Picture 1: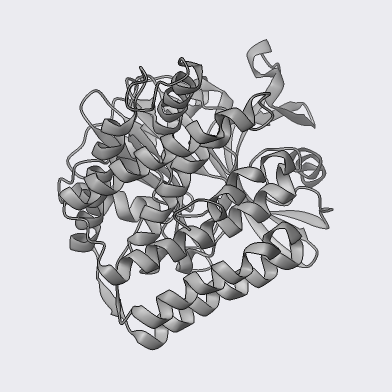
Picture 2: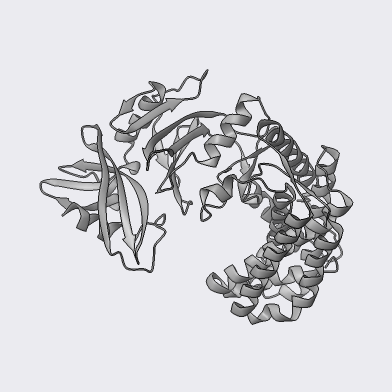
Length: 443
């Protein structure tokens, strides 16, 4: 009966990764009572022969207050079951458990050495996330629950803890985590950091700047518009270089040699081939893209590699009153854990941010009545902020060698190819945003 309730409910949750496919069966692998009325479940969901695991905080009440009606899962015997992440009367348990280093059943709750957790804070669920659920406790903490569970330590916990131990700037202080063993491997269930209540999202700030430019009088360039973002882009470039430096100090580094560089370029080509087969609009750019990938093979002898962010863009950074802070070091959630933890060129992160500047410049053009007239302004804003970011990166010690220029461009173009496929599948009216990457003069 519980399995049936969960099957009917879980497929409609935004964090469920198997939408659009039938659920063959669901089983409860772990069921731990945390406190009366609150259980922690790990469920296995089988679809088309493959299994994914998810965690659920399951609340149970005889009567449900109006504020929790949206979280109902269903009736189970005399109980109403619901998604308890929305119940601030129960989620304080997470703070209590981490503060006290408690063990409950298979769960281990721990706090970062040297910190004190204020357990009086009340929680509120953030509504924007797709793959996880984050609880904000007052103005103090943000606790991310990783809904889909993959055996192993989540890179976000691993990276932020290592950087905090070095007193690295540009990260949010870690406070605690929750883990259990899956398949005999310690696995991260939740991670809590300092909340940044007075910070602004980088994407929102960039869009405000673009909007100011589009609304300014004809003849006003990006440097003169009221919301010029270039100074912030420069600071962000410097912050990125410092994060890369700290990552290189905290984790092993290596160098990949010529044959591995060629293998990397071949990977770019394979992805391009698959993309062209799906999106014919890419076909006219294949020759130029191939030439860019050949430059990597012909001119790159070796590539320094290290731990990187792995999913770097304007939505992953916050501007506090004092500086930029980098968040979400878990990498691309859809990729295997080993791949997210693998060493890579820091230019991969740089390319991701450069693509994000281009997206910010053109995001408001999709469906805009004056899109053609505003296109030159989009190009100008993108070029100005990309250049400022790269200047800040170099000034703070970020290295882009002569060989690195070709590699950076290849990373950026490969990212744009991925974006074209994504937009074709999900937002066809936006496909012109990544396609513009292949028409720019820099190409």
